[in-house]
Amino acid sequence: MRFHLFTAFLFLFWHSPKVLGQQIDPDGSFTIELGLPNSFTNKPFKDIMQGLVSVSPYYQYAFKNGLAFGVGGHYSYFAVNEFSIPSAIYGGMHTVGAFVKSSHEKFWGERFATDIGVKLGYAHTMIKTDALIADGILLNIMQSTYIEPCVGLILSSDVANSYRLTIAYPFYGFGFKPWSIGIEGNIGYDESAFNKVSSFLIVGFGYTHYFNGKNASEE
Image (cartoon, rainbow, N blue to C red; front, side):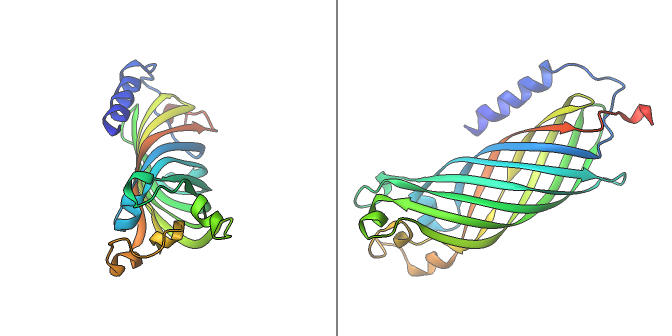
């Protein structure tokens, strides 16, 4: 899947319109990122939960020295992998959150830029499964802070628009346990694994619109 994302990004690079002599000088911008999350670190979380989607829209302002600050929202969804547990359980984990972002955004040429930074946020996680409902729990709710190092590899199509390949690694501030989704017992896991934070790798695409629509040659 990640190979196909990279291939599609290269296709955009070669077939997007040329903007020679029009290097973007960013200030205010809006970005939306869409990616595929893959769970890591916490072994029960990695085995049991299967990432399906992650979406992050945000506004960002970049200063002349490249320092940038942003604010936005986050949503991710993980489905229960019913084949990885002793008895099938259906449902998933929704997470919504808000974050602030600090990064360094810089155009290194007429078309290519990088945006390297970190997001700090607060996440509201809701797990809903048929096993929890059978126990009388409509939603298992967990709230925590999270931190997300992130990298964007950016290609501009004109002075107002660009596309990016995004790589991020969020760390949620809670451990995942089998009973979080309604499973009884440890089902073979060492309890020490339950306290490790839930984390996942996100690889995806992003689109950015620059509100000023200007380029460096216009200043």
